[in-house]
Image 1: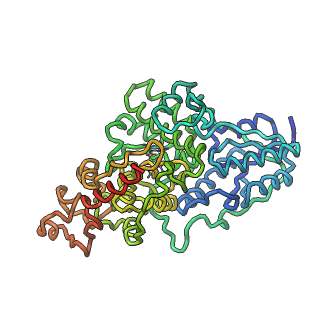
Image 2: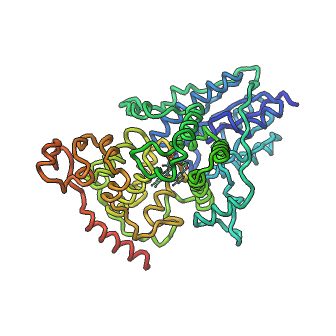
Image 3: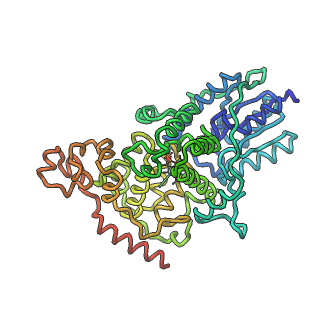
Length: 479
Ligand SMILES: Cc1cc2nc3c(=O)[nH]c(=O)nc-3n(C[C@H](O)[C@H](O)[C@H](O)COP(=O)(O)OP(=O)(O)OC[C@H]3O[C@@H](n4cnc5c(N)ncnc54)[C@H](O)[C@@H]3O)c2cc1C
């Protein structure tokens, strides 16, 4: 047993429950230094967007409280990890550094370099498998390459060893006797002030480990049994909303998996397998991001590099503001702006609308999501965008163009979702709310809707846009 501390470097794992690196450090008997590094300076690291920064601020505060309740303390530092981590090692006299592995190309490079550097100085370095169920390099096709299609990927994952059981949070964490300097989180300015647009986020979410556990419990009590039937309905509370908690590692995917397993054992339902498959999509996206590192920059299918995207700032601005004239699209974009999250079905519809109806480069949409989503994920976000745009791995075929009117009628049948996020249409009867421009003048007038005044006409005609997109995509697909 050594008295030289072990540094536990927290990254995408802001929790104490099922945290293999933390467990290892405690089991080593060393005092534990819990470290978080705000690294926006290392090459290739993607700085967080605004909504994710807000989340990070809250999540770090929550983690700091949990550590303190057990005798530990969170040390905050800012700068390139390759400089900051060795500096904290030197300051504290640490004899070991450990972390849970991450899988983005830049992050992998940073970790490898640090591991070499610290090992060469005689510091013990350990890394652990804690943030995904199946590590990206462990799942390979028969020929040894990465998977490019979800179904065989997930089949291969499921055919291997089942995810391990999660372990509980430690009861006590022994901190070093001497205090260690830490940055002041307030001084990092992660939350918006001028203006403070985070009110809707704060009203919607409880970042942190306790909030994550509460979400999971609510979902397992209320949502899981109807998940297969209702998961595409944005007007219902039918999905878990765990995405930001998983993104920041406030809950371990092993904990989620085990909890779902327990539900299935008690009351079997087909929904459990469906939900597991959605967790599988998260795994697949991380697999892709690991093996194809330019996912947010380059089309996965290189022939799309030559695609003639349109430059149309007015279209892009109307899409961002939720002013396209298509109520479901506008409701989704406003849900995103107000709450930092959007329902998956609507993410597909709005992404398709931008890339296909607008023929706007999917990267513009991906970046907007990156800035506005609390769950903005360097793997799921570009993979989701490329899937919808038709240029990704296992992509939706280019001729799948989501019809924003029929999607609205099918998945928001009473218009409740639209009424909530597009209040200027709230008084419209249900048969008029999905396509207000088709409604009789008297109906519009009775609902207080004045087209082009209180609510826009469609920015583009659906049939015309669809035909234009089919032509453009067919040309690329053929080439
Ligand atoms: C254009 C586009 C962009 C997206 N960007 C992101 C993103 O930045 N971050 C993000 O976490 N998800 C992203 N997704 C995937 C998906 O929309 C969200 O994970 C989901 O809506 C989150 O809600 P939930 O937690 O209630 O999901 P649930 O339906 O309850 O699913 C449980 C978990 O499974 C994972 N999951 C579910 N669906 C997917 C999927 N299609 N791809 C990957 N993982 C999935 C998530 O971790 C989710 O929390 C995107 C999808 C699209 C189409």
